[in-house]
Image (cartoon, rainbow, N blue to C red):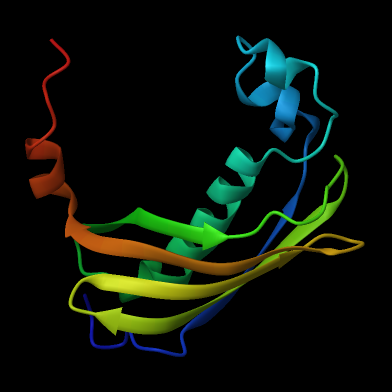
Length: 136
């Protein structure tokens, strides 16, 4: 990690919600999901928020480093329909050893949809991949 990765680093991500990021598309093999309304799935919202955090610190990582999500603690408090733009604001509020904590807020065209925190661990991609079980 570079010394520039400090508290106060901020980033905003905007994302136009496509129709395939709704609850019925999350796990099509699960009938409980497929019968739900066509609104942003919480699982996809987590991914969008993680993406914003990854973008926020990308330029502050050393060559060969990546970040992995380690903790999510945020709400999903309003539905978002396809075609709406989701805006995610993230701010680094703590850097402790190799753990980065973000304050997050997300909104769509109409409502705040999420508030909370997210943590990511900064690791060596090569070292992490070497610990994965082989697929063979």
